[in-house]
Image (cartoon, rainbow, N blue to C red):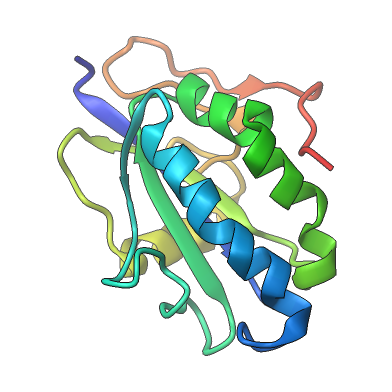
Length: 164
């Protein structure tokens, strides 16, 4: 077992309140996609309230939704994000539901067993925004190996594209 897990935060600002018809299809897809993530290889944890999702939580301002999860490896998170048909279907429609934002995702390595907080996730987004990809906060396209692997050089995978 690895001594580090990969945390991810992604954010979105809805075009309308969550209980309106504009977001109805997104809200209907949320529980099934979360269930698929929970069952995916490498999944460790995800942010959720007693309602089973994180739609009641905000980051940065009172409109921006936050989604966080922890995975055993970058490869397993990538497989879910890019290969899971349910997740891909939601990603293809994201422009119907959410504003375009300059920064929507940050990844970082943390000790296995640590549970990240929303404040920590916000800090990682700010690090990525201010400094660009680094071992402290990075992206799928330009990512860094887990600490202790002996590798320090970032990987720049320009072939990767977001599903949509």
